[in-house]
Length: 138
Image 1: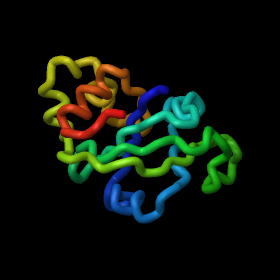
Image 2: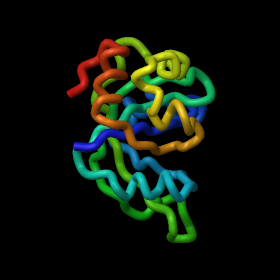
Image 3: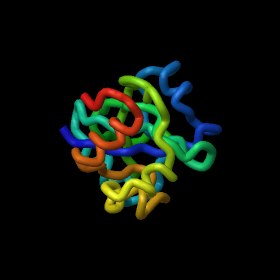
Image 4: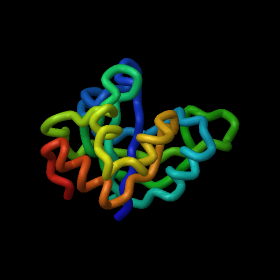
């Protein structure tokens, strides 16, 4: 299993929206690196659900329930997406400030390239962020 982080502005699509919807296409991503990261995702991979702009915090865990496929919002045919479903909320949100303040997370993509909307997370980073959020990592 691989780990990821998916960013969304809560005013556009929040954790509460994701929970209410259940399974959802992670559409609208228009960045080649983010698209390539989604192409690498496999069924059962887990991802942090991160509120960007407002909040700037990890708020939940989602699971990849469909591998990369054409993005239904794309008319050009060059963009792909995955489908995700909520797994569990974080007991306590973990903020960007907390992540940047933790020396063991200094190499985390989020701490160094906060603009990338779909990014990999190492197993060690996954476990530590889950611990910080008082949330089961599995």
